[in-house]
Figure 1 (cartoon, rainbow, N blue to C red):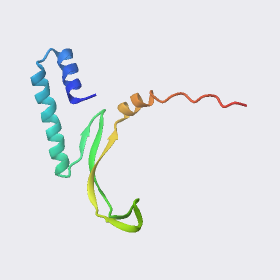
Figure 2: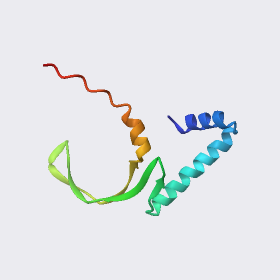
Figure 3: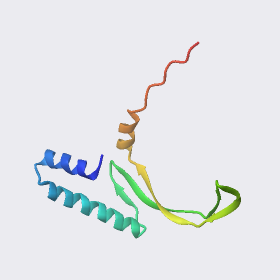
Figure 4: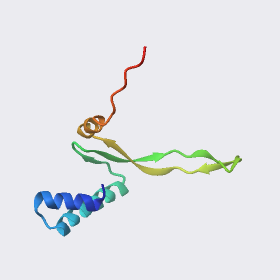
Length: 102
C-alpha cells in the first residue's frame, strides 16, 4: 500500500477531498519524522512505537576481499515495535502448521 492508496481509501470513506487528506497525512508523517530526528519516541496507541536506537560500532567484512576488515561507525537508526492490536492482526496471516506424518 502506498501513501496514494491510503489517501484514496480515506477520501472515499470520509468524503473528504483527496488533497485535504494528503495534506493531513503528509503533516502527520512530517511531525513523526521531526520528533524522531530530535531523538524522541513516537507512540501511537494501538498501532506501535517508533524510537531511535544507536547501533554500536562494529567490524564488517567486504565479501569481495574478506581479508580486509572494514570499520563500521556507530549510527542512529529508527526501530518500530508493533502494538498489540497490529501484532494480533498480522498473526492471523500465519499459516497453520501441517500435521507431521507418523
